[in-house]
Image 1: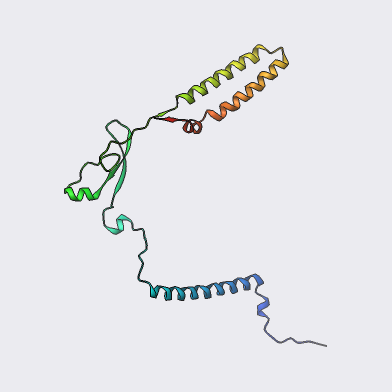
Image 2: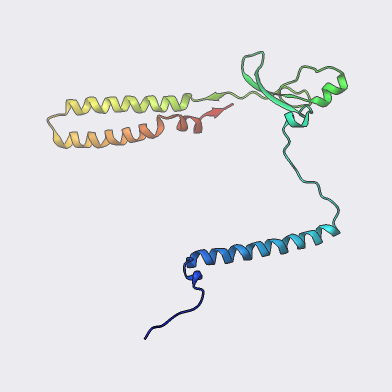
Length: 175
């Protein structure tokens, strides 16, 4: 007995995952079309709303509206200067920008001081050196050596936590 099958079974060649993905893509496209139609209907009621858009100064052909720059002042310290184009337009020529506030007041100067941190680190280093000398001197007494080594490990751990730039920055005193 021979059986003959007639029909199109090409869909069995495509993977199930591919068929599901195609179906999802079609649904997404349909939803996007509907959302676009709804947005057009909503926008028809509202007037045009401007949106922010970046346009480089090279493309726009206009000079930038304001410029900030970092330069050194008369004392040699770095300051931020602002070139106000409105003042330059009123005066006809570009005037020398002032550091700090726009109302001409003198900028506030802050000085950082890390002396306390440096002193603390120096004391820890001296204590470490002292403990190392005591360990060498007490080489015969094992119990005393063990206690001193334990103290030395604690001092080394504290020193490794404090002897870095991050700790110095966090504990800098500004005046």
